[in-house]
Length: 278
Picture 1 (spheres, helix red, strand yellow):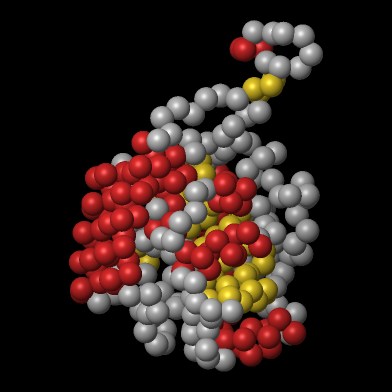
Picture 2 (cartoon, rainbow, N blue to C red; picture 1 turned 90 degrees about the horizontal axis):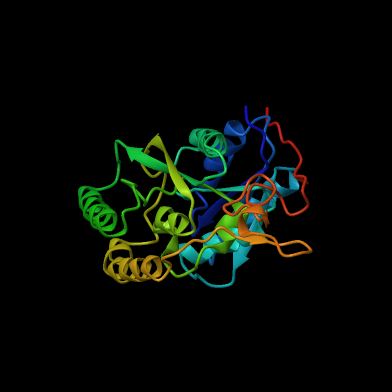
């Protein structure tokens, strides 16, 4: 087992019926590992706050961050990333379709791949969405891959693991969570994939619709393409110490980074306790 402090970010809007089961599954999947869970409550009007408060007072490794009004899934993910204490952020949806059993696999795949890899992206098998939603997703993924060349069959899967420092440096816009592989590649890092099995939504219905993902996604796609085109060169960066020296003997910053930058916590050592749920 690879040891890294992990923050699991769950954007959630009116998912009070799904969160208890999902959070129990997260605790089980992360047994013996160093982790925290951040549920970003995106302006929920149900009993989400009460459910999370009960778990926090019971000593679960859980934090509840609330938006005073709904700002959308991308904003909720970003709020969680900015608040994360772990070295790696894992994102997942709050509706129960993403199985937490894959969280350790994503983390291990990311770390094992080495410092040149910035993201481990889940790739869904056996989709359980409606036929209309599957067709819309298939079209969007095909168009995106053809234009962005992000080497990712399914960028819409909520299960992703990204080095925290790198995640925070990615350009933010509403819809960014659907383009993370392309944005990570723009920064000079590679992508690894982990196949995951999708599940039916546990309860309720989606709070973020097909039109939100489809029509606006075309504009977002053009924007990400523009961002990639505007960054044509990724130089090796170094700083000369003292007297003038040739570039190839200068002390390098090592960007993309190793464990001492992207993979390291802000303090250099994790402050998250190990939570072993029985």
